[in-house]
Length: 111
Length: 115
Image (cartoon, rainbow over all chains, first blue to last red; front, side, top):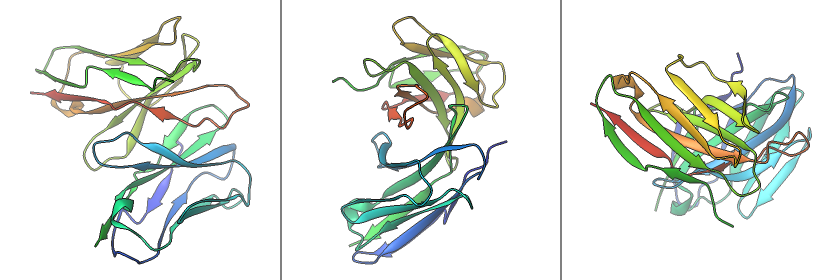
C-alpha cells in the first residue's frame, strides 16, 4: 500500500513569516512528485512537478526540493502572505501511473 | 483550451439510490482519474481510466465503478448509496503517457450529499 505522509496537518503563521512543509513518500518505484495548491472553492492546481533526485524548483516566493533516495520533499514559502492561505497537497506518482495524495497541510496566514 | 468539466456540480440523493457523475477531460488528454474527498481526509484515489480501460484502482468497494468512452469522457457510478458516500468527487485529467510527468488538471468537483 502506497503511503504519502504530510506534516504538519495545519499551520497558522503571521504575514511575513517564512514556513515549510514536509512530504514523505515511498523511495522505490519513483516516477514523479507533485505539489498542488488547493484554495477554498477552487480546484487543486499544480505548483511543481519534480522528477529528478536533487530537483529544486522555484515560483516566486515558493520553492520545493526533492530527495528521492530517502523519500522526502520540502515546500518552502518565504514571507507568507494572506493569499498563500490554502491547502498544500503533495502527490506521489509511481511507475504504475497511479498518483497518490497525502492528506495535505492546511496553511492559514494572518494579516 | 477548455479545462476539465464535471457535472453535476451539486446533487442530493437518499440512501439506497445510485448516482452517476460525469467528467470531460482537457482535449487531447487520454487519462481520467477520480478522487473522493471527505472532511478531514485527503484525496482518496478511486480509479484511473486510460483509453477506455481501467488502468488503476483504489481501495473502494465494488459499489463504486466507472467507465471511459472513446472521446475520453468518463463517468463514475455509485450504487446503493450510503451516508458515508457524502463527499466531494474530483476528476482529474492528464495525458496519461509514460514519458510525461503526469501532472493532473482538476475539475471543480461534484459535491454529493446523501440523506
